[in-house]
Length: 187
Image (cartoon, rainbow, N blue to C red; front, side):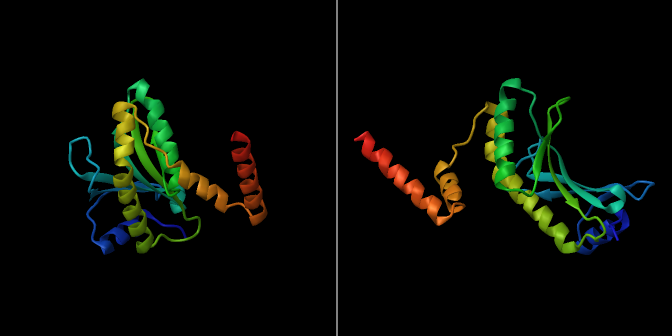
């Protein structure tokens, strides 16, 4: 039992969110709503992010799309944006950034495969809350990349700690012995 556009409307009604609906003839379609942000400002300068709830594949896939999140047409800054976007998508695996090469539009997307399950109110609220939180958290780094071509400082120490934590105790001991050997040869 997949989720129809009517079921999604009922969920948003139950939550109390305002939306515009565009149902398709085939049971697919989308709903459009907006949410306040704390840090992120849209193209008009408002603390607001629009979210498109797209019902696809006969309700077996729901896409949460934040369209027109940013725009990057400067060729020199695109590389910085891609690096930051990949890093942010890797750090928080919920969503990814999508870039339209034709006009420079940047969107944030969450693919939510349901297959034969129904979408719940709790799932919708959690995904939207996480999207808005990520938009706000990522905004300074994404905006610096798009506007100035700047990359954020990377916390290599936490990356290294994470990699070491995945090693078994023998591998960790071997690494420590190797580091000790290198330090002694430098002196």
